[in-house]
Amino acid sequence: MQKLILDTNVIKTLKKVKSTLADYGIKLVYQKKPLQAPVDGISFWSDNNPAIGMSLRYKRLDNFAFTLFHELGHIFEHLLNNHKAEFIDLDYKAQSSAYKKDPIEKEANQFAEYHLISKDNWKAFYQKNKTYCDNEIIAFAKANKIHPCIVRGKISFKRNNYRIRSAIDFEIN
Image 1 (cartoon, one colour):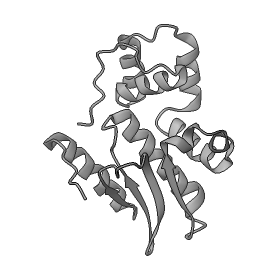
Image 2 (cartoon, one colour; image 1 turned 135 degrees about the horizontal axis):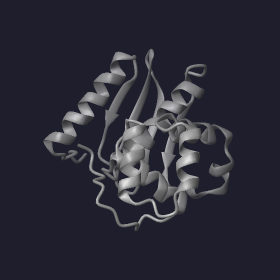
Image 3 (cartoon, rainbow, N blue to C red; image 1 turned 30 degrees about the vertical axis):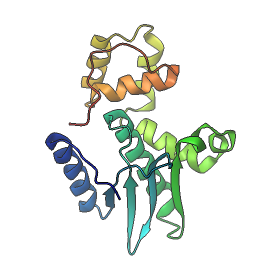
Image 4 (spheres, helix red, strand yellow; image 1 turned 45 degrees about the vertical axis):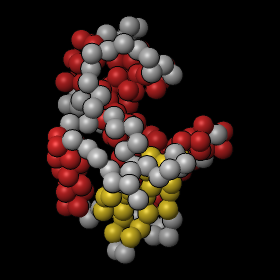
């Protein structure tokens, strides 16, 4: 297996997230994306603890946050009462109509989508803006105590447009 190579700031952030989750009894493992497998995350029960595996294949903070909270959604919504279940999130699955209709995946997506930004705050921000300039995004992110790239990533996802120009840094650091 190939080694996952990351810079020092990224490593510090990943260790902090792993340590924080460990404080709550959740195991977290990072791994290089397996060849020919578009895996972002997996959640399952390991011994007596819930566990999350993440591939970090995009190395973007918005993707990292969504994947982490999606897997936490599976843990809190589905695994705590079913220690035999496991959930693997693959890119091609997310595009399928069966995945989009699956109530379990919808719950995990909603957990991730609204855990860092409340539904009401997001709705008010998203409906009032048309251009979503960096200054508006940064102000909204600051008011909600999150990184601006998470807001920018959510806008890109909602508009299905990832080519929006921005000076906002997406790197995990």
